[in-house]
Length: 383
Image 1 (cartoon, rainbow, N blue to C red):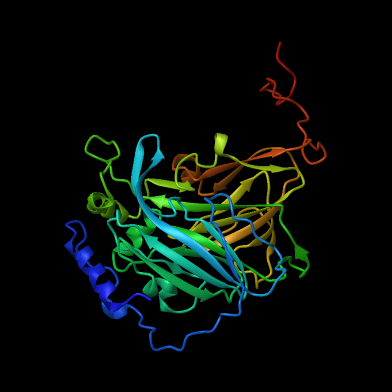
Image 2: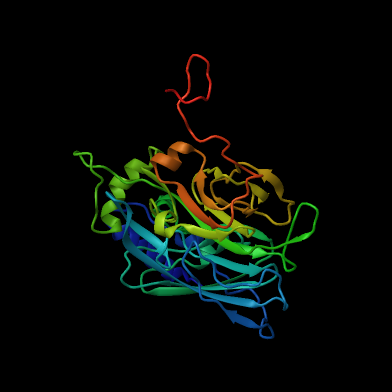
């Protein structure tokens, strides 16, 4: 539990910074749960899970084969410079060193027990707000840690779905930390697995986590993107760009090209792929060019029946959604934010390379491109 003393120390740390003029979460906002009766979970099974960096997801069961467990995770907050594009860098704040932070997977009724580390080499206070949790600012009031501190939070996963988590240390620090990379997602599966619109069981062969981020990187007088020595130095100029609400970059998984080229996602013809998509700050419109959302939990909540056959779906800022698609044709598919300016010009594009055999019944090139007679709009090649 975070004590009043620790909160005061954190406020003093932030107030002492020449770059941050307003404190983080005030001491009186920090929850004191010392008087509450402890919950006896001593008879429950514990399972420790090692998180992996997105777009990949740690091993998990789609249908629970045992009763509710305490699922233990560890995450370290890492402040570091990250390259966003060939000419752009950001002083990132991250969960576990990746943007977005790792996807956690549990089942409804499980307890999530997270140990959150803030290493001593960091500059800032941090915490974590789980949209999947109930109480205490989503855990934010109980996880506010100064550099060199750790905290352990446990909450019961009572609502199935995919949910955002993010850093929310208070005041102007909240948007800055989020748009500096501090967000991720957690998936709470129903114990008996996912269901389609008819209530029938469905499963996935692969799952990928696409975290979308909007970055606000300042430019210098020469027009080049500025580069800073640490997060504190970047704050005033970044805040000015942030408050204009016009991102310099909108990217998947931390940088332009993070999920294209040699980093492209892969699948095989006939495989059902579950795409988890989160955006902690702005609205987004995922679209799979050449495919569809067979089943889409647009709001990300598995108690609700999925929509079917969507061309584009909507992810509200501060939420996560899930879409299931079975690939029917081989080739390269583009998974984009269908604000095409953001997809093409700002970076919100991923590729999925699918292996298999082409099916002409689904699509066929009847005539290859040839010159035609403009006067008659024909397809006969000109002499």
